[in-house]
Length: 427
Image 1 (tube, rainbow, N blue to C red):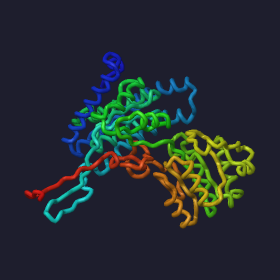
Image 2 (image 1 turned 135 degrees about the vertical axis):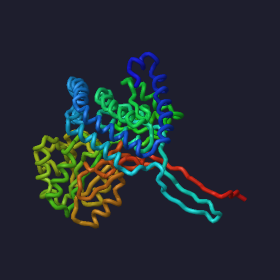
Image 3 (image 1 turned 90 degrees about the horizontal axis):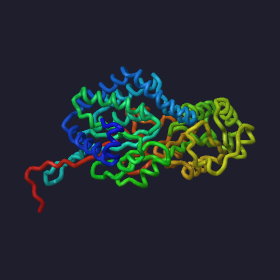
Image 4 (image 1 turned 45 degrees about the vertical axis):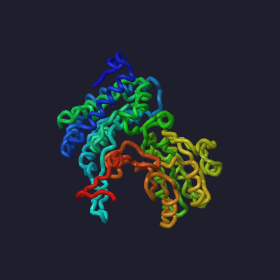
């Protein structure tokens, strides 16, 4: 793999072009290898991650030392931090991807025309995928595994905050590729923290087929603004939990707390809690107390503030904010239609949940809320490809074309038509 010194010697643009050309060659080479070789590489990478626990923790400590000195938020540090349990989860996630059915070559549909032509729509890889992400080093493992399983070459550009951690994980992935006889260039890490590397990636439409940004709103907006390559992206995860008037109070209490506080810094964390005004006086105080006791800052409407003196006034911007921190906005609404209107107006079309015992209300919410993921009586923190049985994910797409929701192996493929004839010519 190229080093920062090598990049300095030849320049960022030249280094990125070389990286992308190597990726293109590797993508073609992967077409000569079947599922067995890809799965062998993934399982070998998982073994290497487990055996490299000390090296991974040491690399992560270097990254944490930098962010600690920068006094970044606890939620940011949590996204960056590796632990033995998280390292095991990375390895297990790679093995879960290996255990999935191989999507490449899957016949999605088949039919025969009156003239005898037999037509199949067959899944094929996208090609070369550039993935730009920020502080979560586990994305390196997830993205590399998913791209390889789906037959794609990957160029990964992690955040500068996780540079040492991501490169240590990359070493494990490339060791797995080598053990299985696959090209190391099938999964590569951009070898510099220079932001110019991102700009260079976004112009390489002849070498990179898809860009997937995963991170904060400013990163994704920059990628969508500058990219000459198609983008699979989500904007911010402004997720909601709506407690409908028929909700079981204990279910509402449990779901609301988990949706916000299990991991406040992930994109599936709830940022706004909506409660039906008809039951707010009875249902809301215990929920607010649980959140406040756990250290969550409460921002709310005037009616909510009247129920708990710890609630500070919510401004207009709070309904549109992805906090990624232990902060939640709380609002009382006038029934189901008001809740749906609020979510469709202020939400980011990522993940939204309703807590209710009324099946008709649940079905109306699930159908009317315009989000990639909608849930009934379950925490928004289930917005995760692993939890969906997809092994892992690159991100949650909030777009409408090609992929929506968790982006797993199937979403990293396209298709082509295979037509078989017996000498037919068109009149």
